[in-house]
Image (cartoon, rainbow, N blue to C red):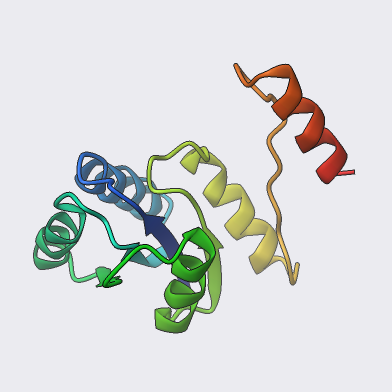
Length: 140
């Protein structure tokens, strides 16, 4: 069976770690997807890494690492990618602003042979007009 790794860079996400691990774990187990969650605390000033360690103690599929200072989201992503052991990787924000419910569809596409499966926001929500325009130009 293939393993899905989910990389979750986190900065001051103490309040989100447990819920994120629970939501993702339940979703993936419900769909029969073998997984690991790799949280990277990017120099967080709150208890983010302590929450990661607590979740790791509860669930062996949860792992994490901690940066000594804030290096930025991209560095967190790269560190997470280095730590993954899965056959496929998804990178998503720790606060679940990326909808977890699309993960099973993405996983299915990958299992059908897609080398890359990418998600793009269809609804820009309550973002400012300037942000919507710049995102629209970026994704063209």
